[in-house]
Length: 383
Image (cartoon, rainbow, N blue to C red; front, side, top):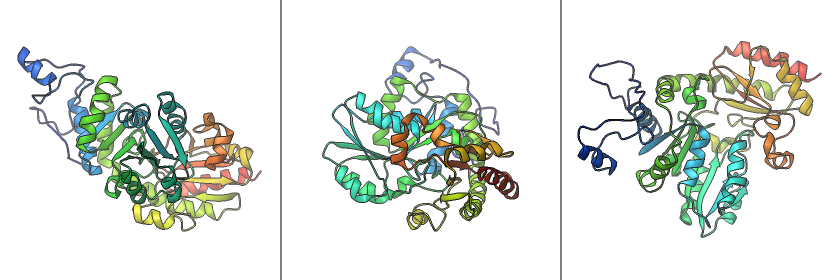
């Protein structure tokens, strides 16, 4: 609630919003000292901003990290966390199930720079071990994975990675800072799209990278300062407000999601429900060890495939059709035609993303209202 707050001489209760691109120095010598990192202080908006720093400090406290770097978007955080530490000839191993844009980064963009990549079944520890090489420099995973919700043993994979000197990067968007702590489980770096639960109200784009001081000093900060994918002060101010209610919002979302997942599992129009909080989830026991709750996102397969998914979405009256997740408003999307459309049918089949899969992000509406909307839409899906 109060971590990272730095009040100005006015003593404001809400954090100040510093809309400035640059800063002035008392003397030329001071400008030289700050540019050389010999004196604390701000230099230029691309290097830092007081409002952004307050957000970074507060999120680092929540995550239990040495440092945090706020970025313009979640994908900027993913790309910078990888490219800042990789060189041509390096090798990356990643869990196969991930957000569509992350898949493109790993599978298509990194190889353009001479970086070899392998995708594995993230739930198979033997697959991770077989894929690791002496030149493996980085492990990337989402746990739970978007959109089919596989849960990866972060501690076990981290131990394997560290055995070959690789750094572990975990995208914790579906885990959330309030539900899962990858750094405590052995990961080295955590990334977020703060657009999701941190803002949580559909207002601003943002991302964050969290980790140790050495990674920040040696790799990340020089990369960010040069390439410039930084969060704007206004967006940081909005994210600060989001952090104040993060725990309350996510607790309510998870509570509702757990009950709606059980309802969906028993419905005849649904072939399968993918939710770590259900006993039927293949990694339920692992999820119970790693996560304090099952999360706010449910994926489920409709028996009628593509057409049934579209009938379901079109029949919704309360829940919105949207690619986003983690919002105060409940949202649903069809991954095959939206978030994972561009990876192609073959890749979707490999990831288990069927034509009838729907991803449902549970918001803050009354559970009874959400259930009624789902029942109406499921009836339409059955045709």
